[in-house]
Image 1 (tube, rainbow, N blue to C red):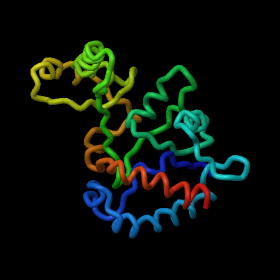
Image 2: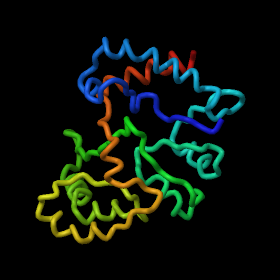
Image 3: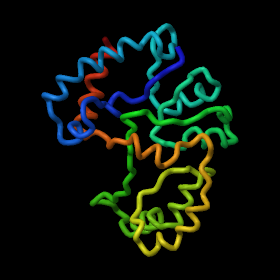
Image 4: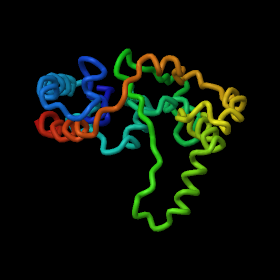
Length: 210
């Protein structure tokens, strides 16, 4: 009982990689959902247990210490540098033999976005912050494994980015981190939010409270 999965609505896949990417399709969803609930109910005895019941954490931080002390053997993360960052941290570091890997199919390529609400009271200050976070210097800092190690989304032809090519080339990939090529080979995009909301709702009914 050394396994868990974090979020019901993330990564609901099956069939082709494209037919679940558009707006919600009830026919496709209703055809595939029962098999998903059946599998998730079937694996419950193998999940990490508390008080005789499968443990579904409220937040990812609840499970990370259990991964670090190897009570839980697999941790799911959107961050491909999760293992390497946790190995190198001074706060409850993970064992050095931890290794991140991609699934053969269905590795979600999630992208973060910066947005300013239309009714923001301090738009100028928000723009200043967003402009800095979008700068090459800030992206380089976030890309370094010691800070975060996050992959950055940018226009490689932009003049500012070209000036930082050499610096980015000096970022060393930790041995516990998958290569960019490995990530690209298995990646698929995230689901439409309508699927995510429906899956989360139905997971509670068909798995958590079943």
